[in-house]
Image (cartoon, rainbow, N blue to C red; front, side, top):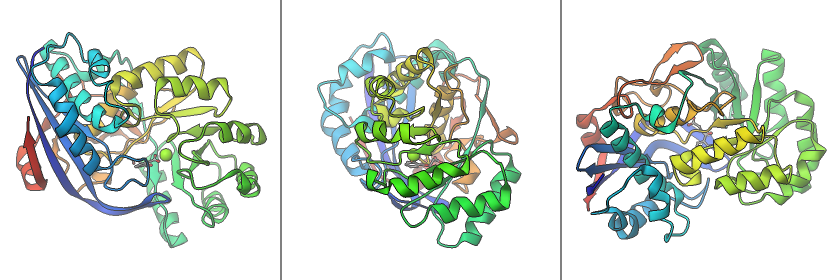
Length: 367
Ligand code: OSB
Ligand code: MG
């Protein structure tokens, strides 16, 4: 495959509701849509960096800059045998994993199209249906949260995850348990606690949570390894797993009992696939996380979620949970409550509505 040109668009799409977490509040999706033109096909990918550096360091601004200045020039005019070549071609640029993942997933789509196969098939996926869970934000009013959980349970989500933050934790979990009993429930702290909060974390341990996601610092494995033996509840690592190697280290240190994989966070689908295979070999349960992606990013995560090693419900909701209109057609929808179907059509498996993309585009650049 010869990369002939790459087009990037910066999008802003309104959310149907505001998402709040300990890393900040998002009222709209801001992202970069990457289109890679090759001699055989044009592929599309989404860079999942958020608007602000509150979840991880990267932002839409930093990704835009790094794509323009370093990543696109490194790929234009290059011949690739496989998308698996991309990480090595971009390895001279340190970090900036979400920027890399955006362009890499566009190459995966182009590759799948040129082979006339689905992206999931190109990645080696085997599961045709994906169990989904929902990630609910922080709500100022307990009443609103209870209503959201109720809707999610009714919609058939197979796991309910709620964001927590110091001062907004035990009461939240207790209220949900009182109202809904033994539903599969987990919490996500996005790194908002420290080992000094051991009291609260041990209290959470009494609520039969499926997992506590990223309780401690975003960049720390060691403290999680100190915490896990003190809890019965599995710790799930999100932010602090930035590569397949990090997953191996976390497993060796007993820093967690579950891992969440996001292609953007680990630098792309190839690294994510390696991570999932390593975890499968080491019997570590893995699920796919979400970053409020548009359909383009979401379809790539769905393809990843079709790997055999993904054994728990993933943070993947239908398009309608986030957007009045998604940029893919047809929008992503459940085949039955709590399940998404991995598309078997060629490439991403849906077409892009360019009218809508144009309407949401605030900046564009061609290399
Ligand atoms: O911590 O899993 C997270 C969204 C953006 C950044 C980090 C996280 C999230 C979510 C939402 O939890 C998942 C989704 O619904 O896409
Ligand atoms: Mg998380």
